Image 1 (cartoon, rainbow, N blue to C red):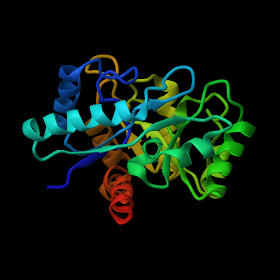
Image 2: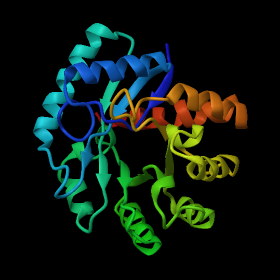
Image 3: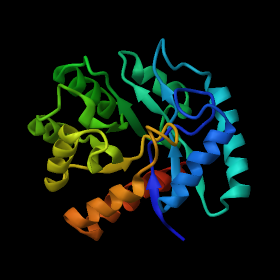
Image 4: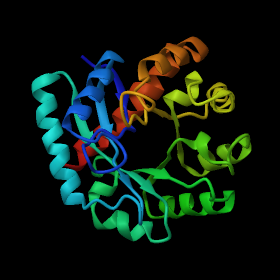
Length: 243
């Protein structure tokens, strides 16, 4: 049975600042299941000088958690992606290994820093589009250059980028400012994906189910299904066509 997707989370044990070990990975997956999630694209960080775990190690640990999950949560489907932190060489890095992309497709979950200005964000986004990639800008509510600047978000969507926001921002767990900004994006039809960005089961837990209910209440079930099911399913479809 098809349930909700979580297309941004950190569940692979010991590869970034997410799950520490297999027990925590399984605990997060249990919360995902309780939230109505059946399909998960796990997105370990890649960020120079911070998160540079060898992709071979990342893949090995992903396969281990997927194997474990199949015995505990047989109806859950796990895929491997990446949360890729922007840099000036990213076009070459992304081309070097499909594990830097979302299930090896053209989709790239693209992260920026709080210090990046709007010119840099726009230029790096366009650079990926020009190379044939499909950037999904991760947790767009976090960047001061874009916060409260809905016109720039619209510009990014106009040039072809997709927009992802975190579930916690939508439901107010990240503060009133983030809730207000993401609420405005929601009303304007500018959100393409919602991810939990789950790292653990405490302060950065999965709240996809609550976010889905919130979005249904605000803009209706059809639009909620587009954001939480249909759009991420397109990434899986693109991966199946590639294989």
